[in-house]
Amino acid sequence: MSKPPSQHVRRLVVVLGDQLNADSAALDDLSPERDVVWMAEVAAESTHAWSHKARIAIFLSAMRHFRDALESAGMRVDYRRLDDPDNRGSLDEELAGAIERLAPERVVVVQPGEWRVEQMLRRVVDESAARLSVLEDRHFLSTPAEFARHAEGRKQLRMEYFYREMRRKHGVLMAAGGSDDGVEDRSDDRPEGGAWNYDQENRKKLPKAGLTDLPAPPSFAPDKLTREVLELVEERFADHPGELDTFDWPVTPADARRALDDFIEHRLPLFGDYQDAMQSGEPFLYHALVSAAMNLKLLDPRTAIRAAERAYRDGAAPLNAVEGFIRQILGWREYVRGVYWLHMPGYLDRNELGATGELPRFYWTAETEMNCLREAIGQTLQHGYAHHIQRLMVTGLYCLLRGVDPKRVHEWYLAVYVDAVEWVELPNTLGMSQYADGGVMASKPYIASGAYVNRMSDYCRGCRYRPDQATGDDACPLTTLYWDFLDRHRKQLAGVPRMRMQLKNLERKSEDELEEIRALAERRRRE
Image (tube, rainbow, N blue to C red; front, side, top):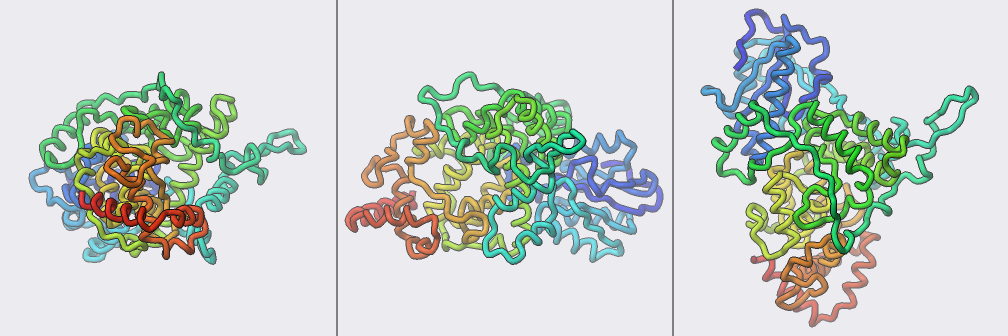
């Protein structure tokens, strides 16, 4: 722990583990003489969600590197290490102790990324003599208030319309127009290329021979500080899921920028074509692998957006790839944060479909005969990573079809991915993946049979189950559970326009076949 200040503290500046940006509003006008930055590693934040070892390690390593950078810049940092002998183990107790010890006039913090943490901060400061200032998080390109204005009066929220507003507001990928003085004007209201969204071009299947000569992402060999963290995590969290042998994530702003630059040069050109594809033994394909760095705020989203747009303007990457990448950041990332703060705290308890099942045990081991789940969960446990289609249309899809309690699914996703912070993880899991919010995030449940996985991956080639069969010993569990899901929820889904075709296909099933499907689905749920 850093040495406590020897004079009166004006502001205690709280920096949380996902707020590691040097341009944070909390660090504005910081006085080394009168202000103290406070940071704490606490075990409770790793057990609140039973976190993957890599998730714990990336937070702790990035925090320690950020601490060192602040101190090198002349700032006073009161830092509590996980292995400090008198560490109290929880964020609220540590903060209360710091306030008691330092007696600041004011506690300053940027809005946390989790409703629970913000409420805790308010409670702890309210119980002290200090005052609290919660500042806007300017890392993002929109604010919760701006999103609330967008949502006001709308019967349904859809990311696409919010995304278009953001594109216009920030002048991203807008068509160039001429001006009287000959200076190029990019403030035109027309999207580049004439369309706002090129998603239809971004769903290419794997080639029959698979994707070959894949560019390897850059490596970030752990330095001395990170190695110390890895040893600490292995010792303190030995019973937690996941591995650390392959830990290779950016933990500094310089690392994060190198990861981005490598993606822009080597993988962005084909990212759009194959962003939905899945291939055995290849966890990364053409993906950017910068979401964890961005969510810890080691990387500014504006930097990523500008770099991708520049690649398009320079002819180095096609529009479908660049627009798809930018939509994930300027569209989905900002949108889910808006949904989170608009609907919390009640959002966490939504369960539109009344699912009550337990999370399958193999989600913690990858020990299953279903090859798609074995691949997606296996790489998750190894790296703390899976790309968006593996999360939505493999691990998430199976839970949705099986009827797992959405809160249990949320807890798993929050625990196992290195990029998981609740503001982004919860709406994507509970809303987009599990349809537990009844359509706030998505206009229909994202459901499919094993045929989808077979079309978008090579997983089915190495599986004992047949994706085209719903009954019998070789029936794909996804296919069986897909038809069972439609059967169980047909009344609820009848009012969802985009479900009409799937429900019509259900009507073609005979009652005898449906009885077989129901019986087999029940067996699968007990496995």
